[in-house]
Amino acid sequence: MYRLYPQYNNWSAAAEEWDGFCEALKECWRGIPAKLIKRLIMSMPQRLHAVRRARGWQTKY
Image (cartoon, rainbow, N blue to C red; front, side):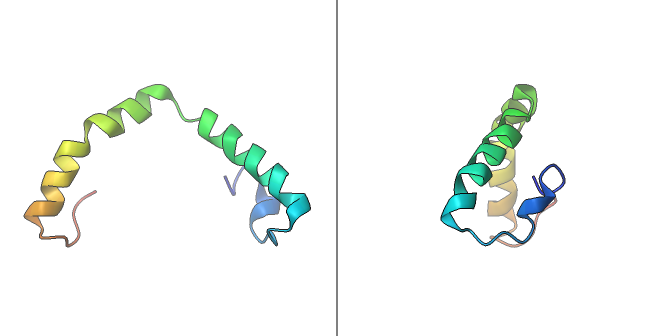
């Protein structure tokens, strides 16, 4: 998001900026390919297993 909308790097969260920020965020989410999201969702069991195996410590994910 910060690469596409650098004006929000140091935004003040003022009410007049909030609508623009929300729209920019929605546009960024729409830009994520559905295939990538599905792949991440499908990998969740592996990721959770890795976290359990590492007892909550760091994993490769």
